[in-house]
Image (tube, rainbow, N blue to C red):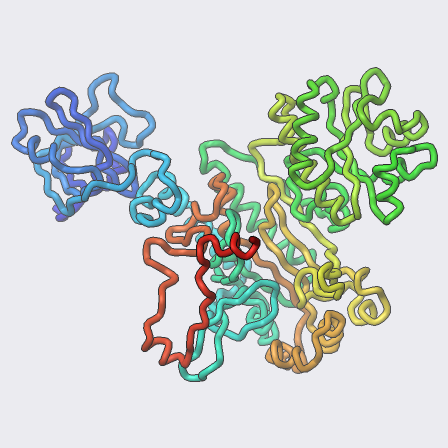
Length: 612
């Protein structure tokens, strides 16, 4: 017999009754039932109930063993007593009577419960992550992550993609976020950068003639932490040659649809997935209708532009009119069948808007064919008819308003759309769809945007994208009107992927970066390798990158990316288990030719003294 196990702890069934078996695992729980001691023995495959009774010479010794100790038992499989079966376990029809037991590794008193969620805080869980990972939820999440990555690989290989590994230490490049820098010992004063994405390398592979590339790529960005963002993350990185935007969509939709369809029941509830082809929404329409370029389509409420109503001469609502005169807009959200809600429903939404920094959230109710509410008296019947037509209003509806300059109005209206939907759900007017994954593509992003702080033109998305209209558009059109072949894949309000058809012509690259204020010298210094490769014949190509962590987070129905990683840092990017980041030794700094120039520590009360 094997020294540790003949079966896993999730394997035994009634077909094994009468057999002598050996199991190894962790003591999950112990229960003393009047002289009969029950041990739930756990491994990664499941739990088996083991029994030792008062007549056994082992009972006193086993009774001393703590939870989470690792043990090996020999015993006989038998049916559970009538009425004691557990249909939640695959082994729930049997139990193992212990004949022999060996302590493999004794556990100290554990700092928090593994067998159940005892509300332990995140930092404590991360400090003892190896214990946290023993929990059923974490085991399920990590197994799902492994399965998703395996499925991605298989689906990509089926479509004749080749898998590559691109460099981890590379050159720094201006790609939107801060780089993590690695000092070079052999080249004093110079630094490598960890890749924010393998963008240039995958394009260079297309220029090398490989045609179809993918990688489960590690990426690093020195950004502030939040629930759906980590310093280190992984993506399904893809690039293809001789393709259009449609080709990219047609290739990746089956991969993503297949993964979500296969694993959509991980929480015990089968969820629907948007049929392919996924809907396509232009960036312009997304910002107008949803106030976001990552709209949650489970929310059916849509935003409409009603500026023309409040710009009319017969409408005397100056709070909006004065903003319109400065170039502002009025956006509105129809809330069906809420006019009968109590005043508190509307006051709560008004208070929410004020917390967002807005004056409030004005509204009009439609009841009995008339408009009511604080704004209604300023809107005469002819204007009210136009409002009803624009927003498709019906009796019993309400309409909420946001007024500001266009960009701010779009953002606030998008937040209001979600807040109104949540308020309706809380009031029992079920609005947001549940049990589904709603996908869409956001397309036709602007190539450039105006930086409000510097008033300079900069790239709005990916600087390596092909502008629609190519060089002619860059030379003849207002840069802020030029669209790019850029696209995002969105699901349930999360951006899962971003991609583009790439620019493959050096003259377009030079002109595109020139508009954004990057001279040829900068281009040669930062992107010289790719620019030179273009000069030796580059195929038309395009690609995309899907965030694996966000995909798993959605499938697991988790609110935080840290719940789908085995080992991860906290929100301040500290590894409290391994003690990272740590202080370098003097010898290490000397080897790297570095001296520290640390900020002065803050002295308590110093700011108050300065103000005084």
